[in-house]
Amino acid sequence: MRYLTTSRPVMAVLTLLAASLLACSDEPRSASRAVPVSQASTLKVSFTDVPARYETSGSVTSDHRVSISSRLPGFIRELTVREGDRVSVDQVLVRVDAVDAKQQLIQARADLSNAEADLQRYNELLKAGAVTSQQAATVRLRYKVAKSQVEQARNQLGYAEVRSPVNGVVVEKRLSQGDLASPGLTILTLEDPASLLVETYVSEQFISSIREGAQVDIEIPSLKQTYQGVVRQVVQAADPVSHQFLVKTALPVANDLHPGMYAQTGFHVGTRQALFIPQAATISRSGLNAVYVLDAQNIAHYRQIRLGQSKGDQVEVLAGLHDGDIIAWNGTPALITGTRVQTAGQAK
Image 1 (spheres, rainbow, N blue to C red):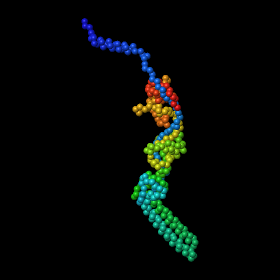
Image 2 (tube, rainbow, N blue to C red):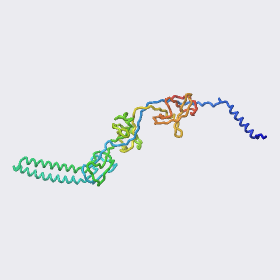
Image 3 (cartoon, rainbow, N blue to C red):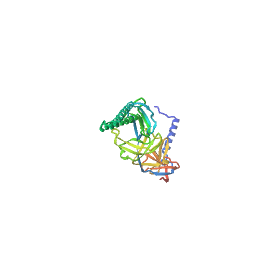
Image 4 (spheres, one colour):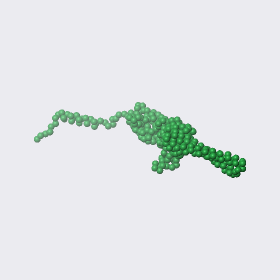
């Protein structure tokens, strides 16, 4: 009969391992390190009412937009401006080769010359008693009509020069030199930069809170500036597809503002509740923000939060804190998770 035997070195290792396990199991469980204590500033966070803001995007446009066209048909003989040019009142913009208007003026002058000759002849005949006063009056009336037609033809020919009715900027040119101009066909489009506004669309959820005359914050990202605008018009009809309402907001006069610029509009639509904490209480690590929150035993715990906009030395907390939470900062020694906090001073 064979027996399994164990070598002495193996027995020695097993004996040592058993002794180690026995020593660990016999370590008193009550033994622990002392809890660190720190003096720190604390604050019990609570909701406060702040203005509610609704933001939407839009474009800068001109409240005074003018379409320029010719009242006479004809080929464009001269076009003196292009997009981006500034024009002044009564400046000649377009000259049309008005052949028909010129012929009408020539014909009207010829009719006037004949009517004037007839009037002189009938006046002499009236003095001689060869014609009646009624016949002379008829000739006199024909002379007045011919004279009026000359004036009318001259005015029509004056429309061959198209002048600017406003001080503005050329924002669009649809026809060029040599093109045929027709009455009502737009040649140029002008906008007055002194009367700018922002056109934006507002959700039907907030349209009841927006009133004409209300102040609006308008940010122009390209200029990195914010302007104070005033609601000029709220179009009381929603788009049937997007269910949004067109709102026009007047802008102040500024040299850097131009039609077509992208704008962000902030409307004040009542109040909302928000949590604000001192910026000094926030911790930033690896791009993440956090604070130390105290539990019922004043033990600090590290908690990540999401921040919103700053307001002076305060910053809004969008997520991570609740009404009634107590935060701590500026600890001496520095705060870490597990630190017991003794209040150094209640923050206001």
